[in-house]
Image 1: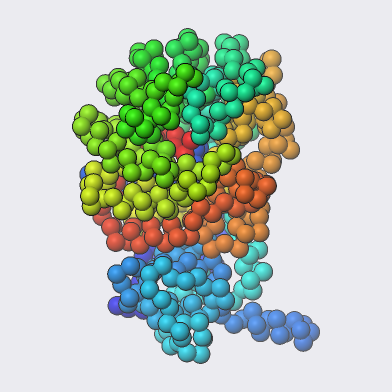
Image 2: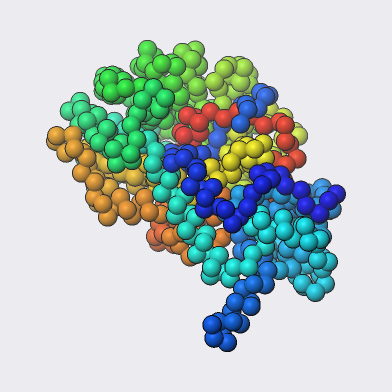
Length: 50
Length: 510
């Protein structure tokens, strides 16, 4: 394999992080759930588009 | 610049490994490994040699989950420097930095603060508690004292329609604080919680709540119930009514009836099962929660097989998940699993009991999030600068019109964050609001230096307080191990991800 392979956001530049964060719309932090941190999984169904 | 300043500048220009670098080795791959950056959101695959180079510049690199580092990996002089192009990639992704540790901590804190502020500009999640009363007496319940100790008997009354009216008037005012308003695209989320919120004698009140919130605008209802008297609510159940219910079953009939008991010691299993059938027939999404510890884990296969035998898995909108009972209050730590141990305990039963693959596990949220990121979702949207809605936009109203931030801290007016006055005006105690809403990964020393912090959020405040005496502390629940194991899974299983129902997700962890 090569030494390095990006798995996401290929053009990511850590120096521009503050600007990128500004572009994230308020309230769009999808990591938040009102009751903590679990998620439902329905087996045997195809993934929805992200 | 003086000599000391020049020296500091010289040192700071040298590359070192970011203190927020996460190493995720792969169980069956000794040639490569995954790197994740704790605040840039980068996910990358690197050769083992590059991983060892990064590790050699990391003063506190953790041990791998699988296999061992080579002896040379901790010695910068003994590993091969990657190609210049790779070094540039590693710098751009955040793994290599010329910042000092203090500079990097400060930058991390600033990014987390911005993220946390954004997370609060969001339509509130409302939890309405019609009563603290319950018809069951489960030993492990965090509210059990309210029903067993006469000193708390004053709490067991029901919310009145007048209190409901006050709360309804307060909602739009609260939404103004968050600079948002509800509408067709953003319906209010109302969770009905207790005590047991669906006692037969509370039926008229719950209907009054539902009618009142509907009059305000679009709304989605869900609830958490023991389901023993759910049949009294049959006509309120369904996709346009109470659309999602979390219901707890702790084991096969004998085990369940020994744990989830009425005051006279009798069991609740038969009534609950009948009402799950009813709810499914009405089109409700039923999410069964199994509260598990070391005493009932062995019976999970039998329980899940009974769900299969009843045909529940074939019903649209039926799900089941495993939740650890936490070592908290009177619960003996020796009897419990942490989240990682529970995941392992369930997976260890997969081969013998394949039906258990239908059970959601505590780290499925992580798995889903990672799969989304690996499919192109913006990783910054998936970060967590705090743990749950108690630190952003959750409002819990009880029967006394008191407002709380966290359902684990209800029933004590001394810890409320405010109340709704007689005119429907929310009176918020700004110092208490700040106490809860300000908790983030920047507000304690441990999280501020943790490479996983923005993926974890700092853990549950109440559990952190039970260990450290303050909510301004960390509750790790083996998160580092869980993160690395889950990432290895997400990477290995790309293409087999499954959909998420956020309304059900919102009911879990209770």
